[in-house]
Image (tube, rainbow, N blue to C red; front, side):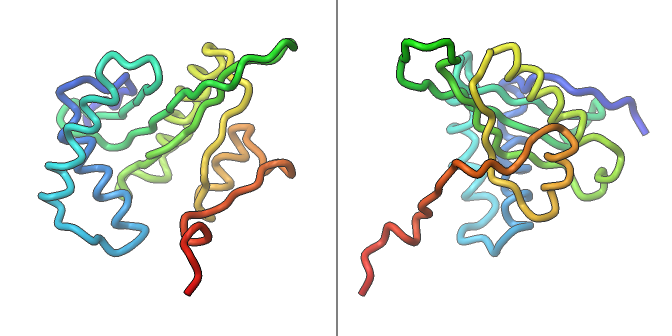
Length: 161
């Protein structure tokens, strides 16, 4: 196996990131569009979001030939406040390691890289939505389930018939 490295995603990675996004999400549910259509739609979105943006950062793990995983963070502002409290949160999303590479500590390394960056940005909180399978990894990296966050999902926003 080639040497693995973690690095910030580059513009040249956008197509591969869109393909990995498709692979990631279709592991969790049935697709509603073809892979080729999704990749054509997602690639420009990724290119725009990650191009010099101060709000988005994405790290990839590669073996010199292909991407094997990724994690993305979006910073979002809080309203200004007059107390000693950071005025940004970080949203961790699109965290994925290819199934054939799991169990080698790569996910932990990717997540630690993202959390280290969040610390450097002095965010107030890091949030994410965890799958049942990923919760133990998140806990080992210091995340926990707070008692003070509420959520309203899209299905609950739709009018009832």
